[in-house]
Image (tube, rainbow, N blue to C red):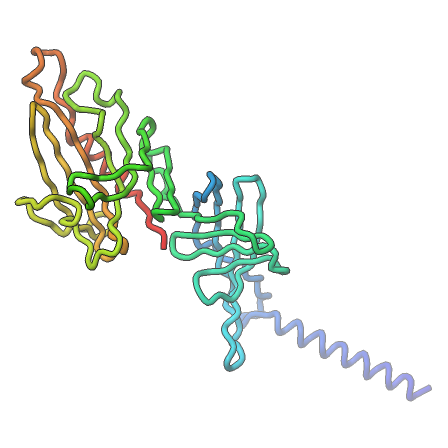
Amino acid sequence: MKKIYITVIVVLLAGVIVWFGAFYQKKSPNNEAAAPVSPAFVGRADYLCDGGKAVSAKYYQGPEAPQPRPGEPPAPRGGVELVLSDGRRLTLSQTISGSGIRYATSNEALIFWSKGNGAFLTENNVETYAGCIATAPDSGGLPQVYANSAFAFSIRYPAGYAVDSSYQYQELGPGKEINGVKFVIPAVMATLTNLSSFDTGISVEEIPDATSCDAGLFLMPTNNGISEITDNDTQYSVASSSGAGAGNFYEETVWAIPGTNPCVAVRYFIHSTNIGNYPQGAVREFDRQALINQFDAVRRTLILSP
């Protein structure tokens, strides 16, 4: 009987010791219980994908991972919350990735990859959300969003602008056409002014396989020169040209982005007519600076994807 009592006492003491050890391990240095570490919100990105689909993603960074064993990569602790345009809401954990950032369900049936400004979603090894490109938030006055995975860019533009996705710049001559997408102003912007709404607008263009990227590639030789301008934390190579004929004035300004390949540029095109050719009071001079300010706002929303 004594042996039984002694055994019970030893077991109880061992349990008490284990409980105290666990208790003190949960204590912080100032004897207060350590609060659980919640994932920290990192940022949000909204993507437009092929086929008119969309993904909204909220990214989180988890607590610091323990030191991995020698030769093993560190285990990521982040996560992402997705809202898909089909109405589904998903929460995925970050996993080890050799390129970009990878998130997946525990059974790997659903995987979301983000890399730079691009992303895609696979379900059972099928890309269900492909060619996703991040979009800039609307800071006001640019409610429309265009994304093109073939050109790998997204951009915002005002309501009423017409989109020409088969646009080509042809002023450099045969065999030197430049492909892109053009956004043409609505006719209402030119009503009762000397501005032409036929071709005034802003385009995003690209030249493949350029050894270097500057604005001179997109224009006929000009005496206006090329300037290096940093705007909104983006460095540009900027050049302009102008011409006139039969009472028409044509102005072009090209904002090329050095270091891009294909070489990417945004072109402003302003077509106006000689106001002196109209009866007095029939039309008013268009607000050139307001138009350029609007084009500037559109250009600043351009996001390039890898």
